[in-house]
Image (tube, rainbow over all chains, first blue to last red; front, side, top):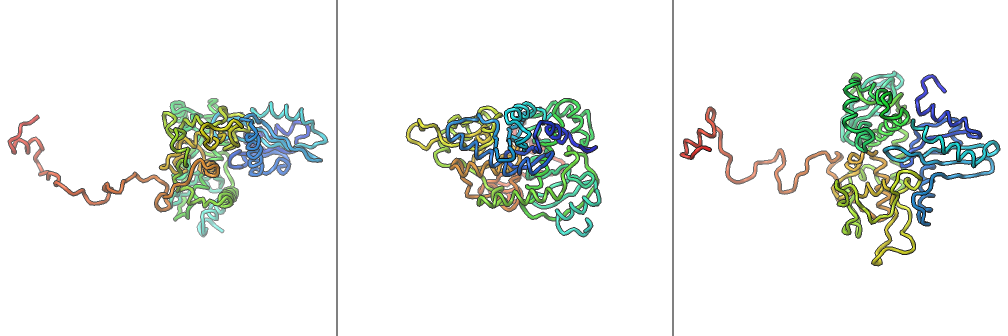
Length: 124
Length: 325
């Protein structure tokens, strides 16, 4: 954490304290713009791709009858997990918090709970 | 390369970054704009082509007007206004950073939609700035990416920005359009959608078709729309450009263009046949074909009475034998 770290950078750096989290990024869910990142950025995922992926999944779920119920997406590979959380804003376009986790060090259920609980802190 | 020999705006900004320049770059053209730099980083962009950070905060009601005016009175130096807003508890520092950063990228995108004219550098002008600011190279790369993405879906960004979308087919005549809300921006009760702002369901434009029960009357199933898309659709009336819609809702121009292209793909809107004249955003007063323009000739008919120096209209009436009021 640098001497001139911004408030957003400090918030994202704190999320790296969660067990197994290797990288996080805050992404504009509409434009894919990455507002900030911490840790291994490549582990968190590419901004435009993450936003497109989240939109695609929500679209398919909506086609199946779900209506605005989705809060997070978890992708699991042999070595890692990638999680996408929606971040509530008082006003403005929605955001995504993308997190990459080391599968050997992370518990998916605990990570979902822990990161989900701390999302509101990101915009503080 | 130095700022004096820069051949284009990105090169100029890069040179000013190396010089750690603090001040403004005024770019002429349509839309043109003012780029505010702090230590070589881009802190704000003000352009008629896209809402700035102040609009993004006030238009959606994130900060109300009265509170804003009070804050401005308390902190006259706009450069320090952001810190004041945060210390007053009106907005979180990270959220303000996001709002300001988003408008910088959006302003750069709006200015990149048409070739710039000349530019000149100037002294610092106080404004609400993103801290610490955005690297000029990141701005250029993001603007290029945005242009490329729109081109990938078959849309020329410059043309799209000047189009005037209108409701398409059946959606335009059944009350699902712009007349739903008191301000013409609400309504659309016929569409399924997310009423809240939480959940990833809010992220997408249209999510599938109506449930298996189908729409009444054998019409096309009504798509599910998020609140964001319903609000945008409510503002479409065939007269507003994407820029107009962005200003009306306090959203980014690029985000509005992406959402409009999604609505168009769903068949809910169509791009108007005409576009705004020239490269300029629709800031000019509307003039109907038969009405005189501001610089055109006076309308034919009875000439206006000639005013003679030293004489009032009341004097003229008395001279003509009329009774005064």
